[in-house]
Image 1 (cartoon, rainbow, N blue to C red):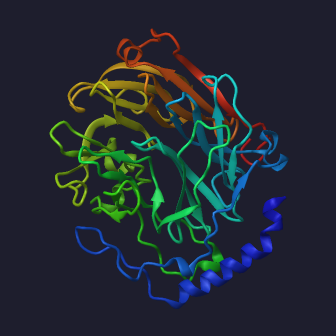
Image 2 (cartoon, helix red, strand yellow):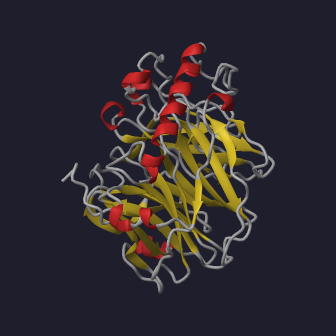
Image 3 (cartoon, rainbow, N blue to C red):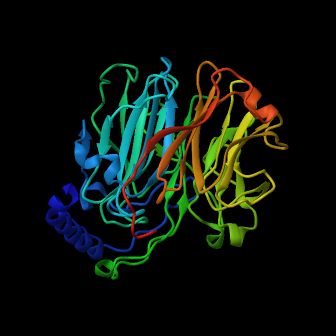
Length: 418
């Protein structure tokens, strides 16, 4: 109902935005190895820019009405509260999508009603949660005022310094970047720099009424960097990859023990050959090597990897490291040698249609991984809690470990995909 109420102003906004886009020269790619953006990139004045935050949302967001959901993110606070965000709404990925935020104070046994919903009269999606080194929680999401995945993207964030409070105090919404999507949560480098994986989505199909707009650039991955704890951000270097190898480059970065930045990225499985590519930066993310093959085989889907407190690297993906199992068999692995070899293999969920893991390690050492299951049918957001020991031994060994915890299950009947 809410979307319908906004239909007329949304159409007006789109018509105005389309005329503005048509009036200017085609946008051009970032210039130079340092990835600085040219002036021809669209400005905030050319697109509607409202965050559409809804606190204490009403019954129009009931689970029984939602026909699609997935792509979650998770954090665990110092007080043990679990926060999870994801998006859904409509029949699939598209203009009806909105972002949801929920929390649990009892290890996932129960979950709150939505603390907040981000719901513009156009698409809101790809949310992420992140705790910075000072304990501030960042809540990030993408807006698509033009209904396109490759033009007009707005990257928004709000923060709270008290994520354990009964009613956290949220900052004013902040527009961080235009024409860049959030891909994954940031990484803090050893020199204190924040590296935020961002980029522009692969070119999609243009709506008929915008068919006169020149095609967008296609996917360009380019992290945002901050050296002042997120007060300001500046673009890092473009990540070189052949166009035919690109496919929703939801990349992540860890810093190796020798200080080199190691980037793993999703690629076009059929064209690239193994599904996960790698790139390296020797100058803190300002330039990157050409994306090349890894020994990690994967389907076309997001994966998750991070440095653990022990110094080991955790990798969560579909299937064993050397196999493409499609979007099934969500598993966790460890590496002691900065990704040269992998061992362990904890099966988090053996079913088909499990995808898009995100996670973090809590202060007590436990690992929290959230993912989705059967976005159009079962419509479940699930959580796994386990230890490094569990991963190494390939089974749950630790107290408090548990798999397939249901965060949320939508039950709306999605007749378009039955």
